[in-house]
Image (cartoon, rainbow, N blue to C red; front, side):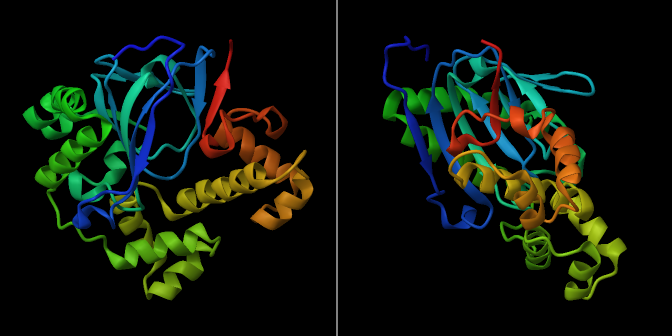
Length: 280
């Protein structure tokens, strides 16, 4: 799967073609690329991903605080609560799935909170099916291109579902409310739940507590505004618009969730706002 620097990059992003997967997967894709930087910050989004490295049979992630995670080349990247260092070389040829809120839940036998802040190999989660998935995707891409690889991945997901492929509408509503900045207590009231019940259901299916999920989604709203703007951001205005107490609160949260200051934030591109190159 190796490419020379002169080759044209390949990128394919699609919605799932299987109707049963549409409520669970926001997007999936195949990408090839070579990068000049030697390391990259991956910022927390509140969601889970499935990743398959077709260039090499390894994946790794290094939280800024805590032990390194390393697996074979197919893994689930659980919802992260902090930034992590990743190796751009592992993105030279990669197939990926970005799950919607609660979308990873049907494909796990444990609550999504079990993979929070973890990179877990598919061989651990799915046994033999997970161990051979990478080889099957390599064969499919070689025979029919990236689209064939993505169809093979959809087939694997449908086969591995361990719960109904229908997201819990109450949890999806909770996620939508928190995503819009609704206070946790108000979200629980809207659902007719106690805060404790909301916390348990969110941990089980989103992988995060409501407060943590809301905090990360507020950060994502901020990044969306920064990358949609022209010129230097007005951080005081953004703090007010995105639900921070003041600019100092925004800066504190940015450091906690990105590992850098707001002024040091320079993503790979506006469309890749959660990938921040480091080094040369």
